[in-house]
Image 1 (cartoon, rainbow, N blue to C red):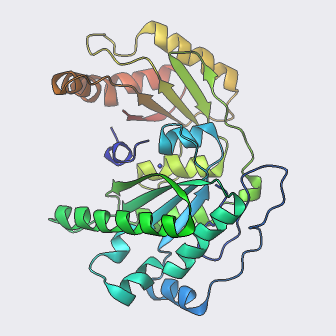
Image 2: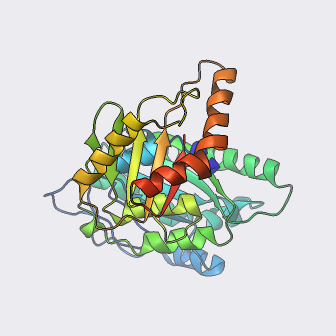
Length: 312
């Protein structure tokens, strides 16, 4: 399991980094965000002082992207803040660390591009943190959650959710921010439509945004998924193997229909029904002790992929 993605209730045509180009979500419309003016001097100075952006944002346009960050809810933008950047800062220093002018302009641009836009905020603690920082990070997430809500209210944007991502891989933040900066919104046009049935839905990864969303769950390494599988049928811990022959056949048939150009990594998203803690624990133990690194690897090889990740 990837703890970071469980913390995001699975993480918009929009600014990629402060001062970058924007694109309107609705196809065949004029792009009012394409030539956003540069930020004021103070905003540029803020990034110069830290050496890296304080936030980045990406367009959310496909069903798969909405599944990954918002359980399929309608959302047009994902805004990710560098949670480490504001720790211990107050007043003017904190506003500079947030790059508040650029962030306000990004949110205003989302509203201008789509008056009915909704946004997801992720407070990203992406990178290695010193030991004994859990309470500090928790306090910072609460503070940033309040600030994100206030900024969205100021911009008159609807907020789908505000959540945190904790990824302890050194250097994960600059990798994710650089990947976001390199995205050209005008080329993010693939539909990423699912195939499958009521029990299995399989999505192809065909956009840079989705590559980013699947990359950062692995610490920002360039190993984004080529295929994402949502197993809609709840996991039964008594099954052996956990994913039986019938479900495997459904997955295999769906993958064949996608005609994937490459099959490096497949991501499995499992459904766990948790009527009580004991039921959740049984499912958790079955996934961790039997599926992850064992049955998942065997299933992955049979499906023709090289690696996998598992979330639930």
